[in-house]
Length: 320
Image (cartoon, rainbow, N blue to C red; front, side):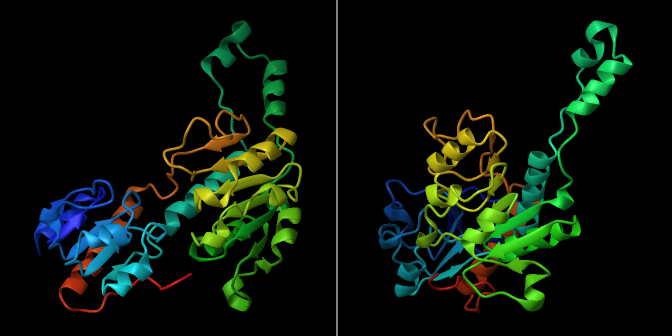
């Protein structure tokens, strides 16, 4: 038996149903019903937290599959201590998140205000003077290629964002916990964290979920940002201190932020960024394309490999 705890695509569920019994069920109060104690596999996305308490309710478990990339909600060490394998789908949402990030950057630097019927019809129609005024209002200060992009976290997504940004003519600098150079840097420049914040026109955050990244973009970091900086976060909600970022935006009218991930989720009305004109908030949708969801759902292939006695292709790494 395999439990599918969070919404999974039809193709992924059908793959499992062709091979074993599948039960679609969500845990209650952090545990599964006793009738599911014999389950051998568990597939989750982001809603279900896999910790010691949940594992205690599934003593027959052999494998946990994360239909996605981040492992923040899975205690990998606790799983492995019980002999439970953990598998995931690295790279499955890279293209989607890169597209979102580049689109967010363009939207912040080159905002488009479309002509409405009311604008065109006002005063009996556009004359040359009003047409020129609208064109003037749509003029931005700089080309994207004149800007410096700073990438915090230069993994699969961050490095691909850097490659695309360089193709658009941007100077790209990055900061990562690993030493990255040569061909792996792809023409991007490694710099210190503080230096990156101070020199970047756009700051993209693509770090992982390790505890040390909590509040990484906080009051001190925001104090180093340029007056008109654009901050984009598609990593984890807890990485950015929402209050600190909101204070920075209020104090710098030319600054902008695009935030896709929040703490908590669903976002609450008391989040300091809610209602700020300079902040664009989205509902954790950077990876929300049909193609990415299909790719993430293919974790079921590794779930079945483990249940079938074979080695998985994508075992979760241990530790940070």
